[in-house]
Image 1 (cartoon, rainbow, N blue to C red):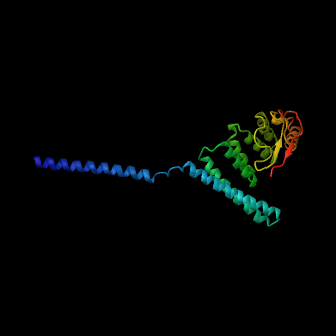
Image 2 (image 1 turned 45 degrees about the vertical axis):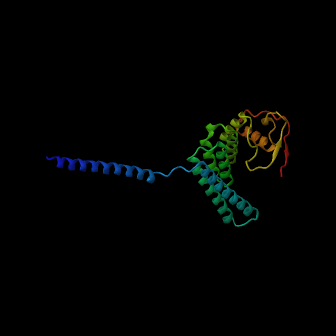
Length: 224
């Protein structure tokens, strides 16, 4: 083989190598572009969360007014279904993120208000290991509401064991409850809450067994 032939052969090999490298580069870039979309930023996720929440709250208000006006049952249910749909969208976001536990509790409370107690209970049970007072109180309320008194007593016992922290009635309750400064909140519960726990003790053989004696009658201060 002549020198000229060698040179032509080398040029051909060089061209093939360049083409292969270019192909690899293009393939890599295409894979980067066509691959899974990047996760939304924390700000975008927060904005979507608040948007869904606002729309759900709006539908709950419409449902409440609908019920008060004694309107068509079908129309009222439609509003509740619409609210539940927004909360389910929030639930999908929750599964793919690391939201604060309070968001979990707020979402569960929203599902409760939309008539989806089963979904709310299922959600809260997935996060029991977080050891949050609001979570256990709401879980106890939900279980009590569906007649599962045994597990309600367990949830309330955990809540009491954490010092009765968090809300006292529901997350959307606007009332304030007075209690002695530096006193154990569990000894100064609102009358409605204590009555429910005492009724539960009678039904569940003394559970929640860690409910302390009442220190005094809790007074309600109405906030406007």
